[in-house]
Length: 427
Ligand SMILES: [Mg+2]
Image (tube, rainbow, N blue to C red; front, side):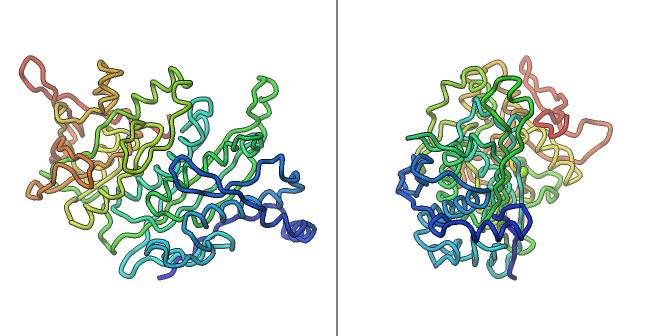
């Protein structure tokens, strides 16, 4: 099966205006010169010349063409080859038959696989704050959110598609400093390179001017928005769903929970402390569960390949909310043992009184929550990520709470309701 995905790296005005502007544009402006730039992750990617060495963009088309050329150059460095028809750099890159530069990308999923697709917004003031999060953190988290959804299905990424709407000040670079957009892309592409995910298309636009910006004397003329689409593949009828759990199944989580919420609280209290945090180097510990969360792709792929899980979800909204999704999807109820929940050391250290609540309701940990038959052997760690059994699924009875938490008090365990109190998309 061949998948064709439409992506727009073209200007929005009418086609007549578009062609006229392209014809009028000087030839050498379509493919700007690039210069090597070593990024934090160690591999080399090209970067545009700073604005001071480039003629001012005469039109939207000029700017769009530059951005396409910039992305192409970065991808060329990432894959070591042309980006329009990627050579056999790796089997995964071969799945992109046609990348950035045409009306659509063409993907070729492996034989016997079906396509899984997810999309996630990263909205300024909703998912990140420009005053708190570095552009590297926003770019890294943007891609992690999509990859984590693929991990939850046991899917393998085929390609990513990125749409960006940015205010003018985030696209411009100052002398000696990369623009916000470049820093965002550098981190996003570093993560993409780590997991072998080609960026095969997207869209760019200038976000509308905020009419209040001058009134409140802010440098921000509009808000930043990034939308990431991840296309992956999974063997036909084998993707891990929320609806496959059965009565008696054990409930497992990967990694430690509450770290993202704990780091976010620290970030909100003192953003300046986190301005110099860098993109984690592959193979080294990642001390930033909120700023640079890791997608658990290898764990999801292992679970699918070894047929160990009956259901799975990624913990993006919080354990209490995401376990509720599994219970509702499978028509079951759950009992969780508070003593078994792996609380992140950062949550224990910085918010000892609140650490259990952070682990249950904090969200954005991007760990996996999965269920497995009690007869199935689940190792203590999968792909170097620790795995913990935290509870059991049971039959649902409308007279009792859907999910209960066993808490020990005075040497005795008692059950209390564990309502979904994680992230709510509409409040
Ligand atoms: Mg998800």
